[in-house]
Amino acid sequence: MEYFAHETAVIDNDCSIGKDTKIWHFSHIMSNCVIGDHCNIGQNVVVSPEVILGKNVKVQNNVSIYTGVICEDDVFLGPSMVFTNVINPRSAIKRKNEYQKTLVKKGASIGANATIVCGNTIGEYAFIGAGAVVTKEILPFALVVGNPSKQIGWVSEYGHRLEFNKNGIAICKESNQKYQLKNNTIIKL
Image 1 (cartoon, rainbow, N blue to C red):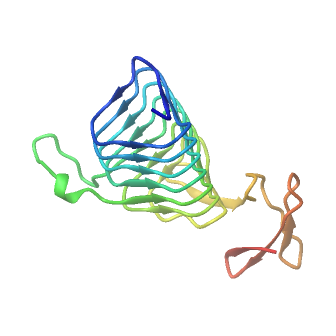
Image 2 (cartoon, rainbow, N blue to C red):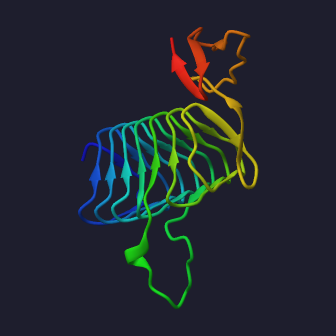
């Protein structure tokens, strides 16, 4: 076994778990999911069947990742955030054939207690604020907050808010990477 699983973790058959991944207390990794190398699955996490997590995905405590979710490399899922997979759930009506896909692109971060309504894509390096309720597509590098969430700015790959000058250029204060805002799209220079 090339990964670590705490003795209280439950790992179903037919899972693919990458090298150097850590799975902590009371987490349940369900059948046919794929978890990449160097991931960290916190305490009390549920990874449902057929979920795909890329490399270096960080899942904080009490997160539910339901069937239909795909997280690309370097995604951060904050404490107690949740995904949905059915738009109109009812206890008495089975809708497993209606599960919708949710794609979280490379480097995106989702804050604590956020809810991601199914069927949407979270763009590369987007930053979803704590407690936000995402009900639509999120652009790459977008900073969104609120319920329902709305975009209030842009962030760098390092997660710092970008302040654009009159020429539409911003510099990340940590990496010194330059970005350009053009036609509501962020371009790395």
